[in-house]
Image (cartoon, rainbow, N blue to C red; front, side, top):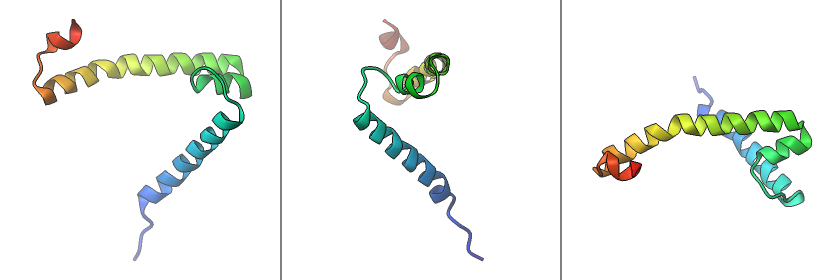
Length: 82
């Protein structure tokens, strides 16, 4: 029994979303991040919330990225924190 490849099922919507974002960036060029499109097409409060969520997500991930970089490259941790 053949099963559909799961990667294709998950990849196609992502590809279509990136194509739509690329077309929006050509049609409506703006200075700023993708949250400005949310402010323009949905609501400014949604853009504000998505901007904060994006920032908090990166503040959560950043220590893990620094830790991984220290482990892979064998550079002391204080070199990244200074």
